[in-house]
Length: 586
Image (cartoon, rainbow, N blue to C red; front, side):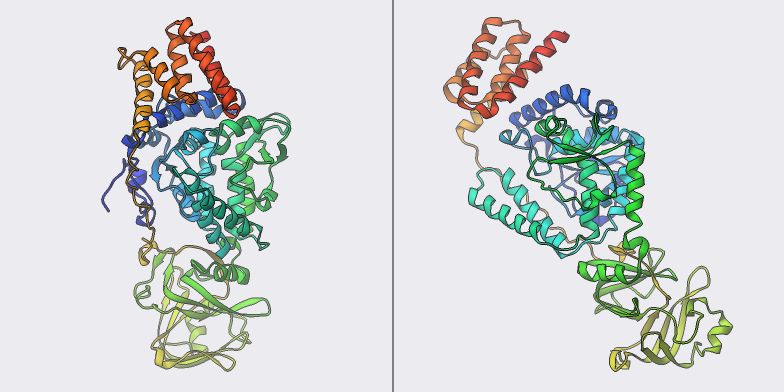
């Protein structure tokens, strides 16, 4: 795959199925308006967050190379992040939850390179570089939190989803894209919102992925830390939101001690959160995560784990007690007395041991699925996997011999044993048979005309999880990247507006001091009278130049904007306040 991103060793080691989500940042696509939006949010947040955020935040801004005055580049971030054992990649907005988690497991931050529109400056439901770069990146400079994030990704990547999860992911992705796209039809947004609400209101049992996604939301995204009465902010969603970082500190938001019960508390991505969870410290986050992991199929296995795999209708892996792993889309389980006695997949399937595909047992052999009994032979306490060579011979389980086996739960098998495969501990994990028939009571599960039969050995299913054991055995390159949209031709007004923002920026940074600021104000008044952020930036230039008369003229124009657009009044006041504070410090 051709590299189209600034790399570091962590990114180089990513598997191909994760690299498919990476895209170039295209830094040149950020306009002067985008840069002004970033700068306003960062200046405002840093000013406020230094009082209410966890101490790791402000220190993390320095360590991770996040600048206040300009949007960060992946190149710069990766150069600095590698010193603390992390990396960052730009991706195409929302990516599947399991992939997002797996990136984290590899110590790689996933960053949406898009930036919110100016009219959504306080909050956007769509992932953007303000949320990812200014929210997630700084806090990982704290080693304990960084390890929690990595471990969360490792566990979360194995969480099993269901059909509803897939539908909600697609609905949220579509709604977020519509809301952040320019000139989106209002009816399309309303229809997308209705579809998402319909899915969320369906009363179905939460999957593992839904529950761990809730934990992610209430910690990584919207977490508070410290005492319930006086918490600090560490969640990226709060750190990157002008509105919610203040809202969450008010009594209007209920503060709840963080426990595993948060896994069952849903959330609405499009609205401010009515309650938040407070962890006493970062170590407690890991304790709750391990408590949750103990409820997952990856650690419990069994019949319930197999049923979760079937409900997911997606690639998953079942590991038996011998260590043999079956990877595929599971379609059926036969149960007896609360235990699984037979499992079957559909479509391409592969067998592995210790996450390495068994030679000759890949998806090219099992193109149409795989099925095998699980459990002990009827009336025999000693499981096949625990039998010595002498025991196996005594029960006629021997190469070249015809054998008839009856498993618990009325699973019958007969055929001629060809060979057996053992694991590193000497336990037999696979038996191959010719002329084999497998049936459950009167139902034929496998017949001789289907070829050689391979019996996976295991007295029980000890683990079930999302994804495949050996990623090299499957074609997982399925992501259809959103094509880079051909930019809409900019109107003359838009071009002129961007030019004005750039002129103000160049003047502030000393790149061009010949610009007439008075002419810029005149153009604003005549052509863009409601451009509050551009006007605030111009006010900053007047104040820093100690041009009080010009500053007064600008502030009068801002008062007019506040009267016409009360909804931006607080944003204007906060912008002016930042200018005054900066001057007071100087």
